[in-house]
Image (cartoon, rainbow, N blue to C red; front, side, top):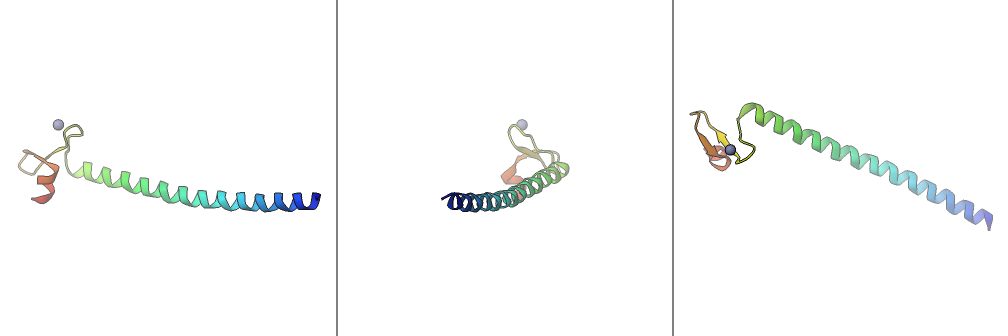
Length: 73
Ligand SMILES: [Zn+2]
């Protein structure tokens, strides 16, 4: 009986260990994705001036256009 409990406990500990490792991997992937997104946003905001409130973008003629117009022209 005690052996059974010990075995189950050992199995559970191994499962927990595996789950921790899996979580760590997934967390790393998510963190990298967030970092990439932030880097992209920083690149974009360094190149174009965009209003964070109404999302208009200043084009090369110094006039403000919608993001949709900006990316299609
Ligand atoms: Zn605005």
